[in-house]
Length: 177
Image (cartoon, rainbow, N blue to C red; front, side, top):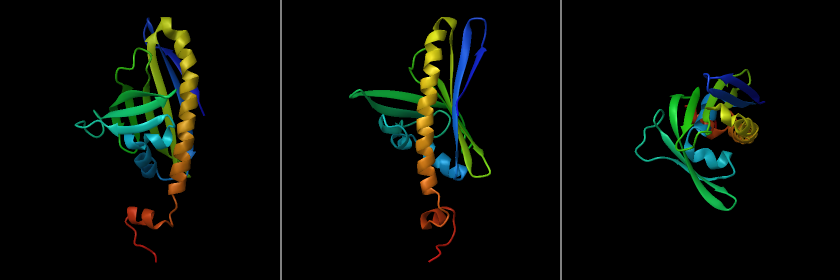
């Protein structure tokens, strides 16, 4: 599921990437509609208690998503900005105020014979002096990605039943009563 990559970005910096993916038996658009809105985050990440698109920001590139987490009984607020996106294909976010070791995160959707592959990638570029610290972060990012992917898979697959009147209506098909 996970794959780590390392490369030298230049003489001073190094880049590490952690990856995790899963195949989901549901159409790509349904998976996208589930993962894209910030408001869905509490369904997929148990520490997120509330999430929303920041008022006044556009949908897609330039969108700022805000997440309220409860960790150790304390609330923490994080925010990301969507820096690149093609709806139902991928979205890439960067942390706002996340510090020098905060990752850029990409969500990539591709069609498979059974439905959709969703891959989450965390990429961190950092000064060489932080290599040991970042190398320890990558496995935890991959582990949290696998947990999110598992939740997305369960939710998307339970929503996908081509006999469902709601999904038939969503797809513009007449009710079959």
